[in-house]
Length: 400
Image 1 (cartoon, rainbow, N blue to C red):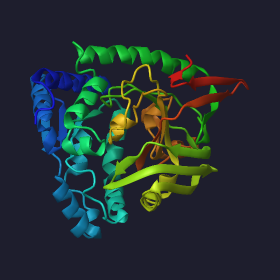
Image 2: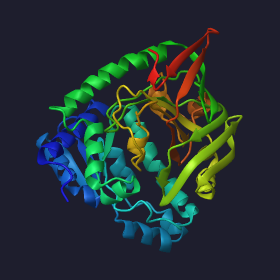
Image 3: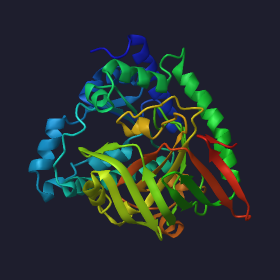
Image 4: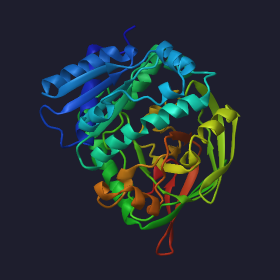
């Protein structure tokens, strides 16, 4: 089933390449770019590959495992197999300059019933590959972007027809604009002013209040807010990685989520002294607890984010984290991620942010990174280091 016109597909590919070349401004001819694609996203993947080749990049194209292959592995593998990394993986990822991921799942529940421990073992085994890419990104030698291609499964789980789902994607990614890449460039500049404002306030603590939560984070030393950096298409969030040790209060995710074959709904976390000490959910609560027990950092905060409704056209549940974490709607959204921090939120020379300094500054370390989204009407205030209090976000938009 054709979900996009040929012109829309070309525009989508252009937007992705804008994202990649914005995320890594040092990309040059004959650099190596990996394109990973689910089978159902092949139509877009082929166009992205062609455009990258035309730009003289060396492209490695890989289809991802089907739901059947993925389930067979997790169901029948043993501990040693789940800890396995192929010969040359570290060298390959160490030499990558770019990575494009086209998410087009044909199933969101294929791993339902699989022991969560097995999924965690694989995440832990592959963590060194992520660390290699993070290190290279900090040194300006690597960049990545990703997108979602509409599938019947995504549409079904979002309770839309495939045509309606595709229309939501096109709207969110500006595929009906004459030049989506140019539109993203304008949003990049407009959100830069907000990030500069936030970074100049000198914030100590941020408090987020809604009908269901009262939640505080400590921004931490030498932090900066980032966002709309090319890493995701679409992306409207403005985020930082706080000092996990200063997290306290109740956070509530009113948007449901699919993860690891499981559906979860209405997650509630109570933090004390930086850790989630009470974990519950209306559906999937035991799964949430298991994920947050993957390692010590999985029950601690790695990200805090706000999305301004003036930029985002996403106004409904999409059963896809990329879109849901960028929800605009009436009140924008706040989302946090339990698990790993983003090193590039360090306001100094990121290439010098070693393990010891990360620990000293309260950057969280984990094999998990799970975004949990709240779209309620909320007020966000900041206690500044000067002693003043400032409202930074209200009614879905920044007060800049």
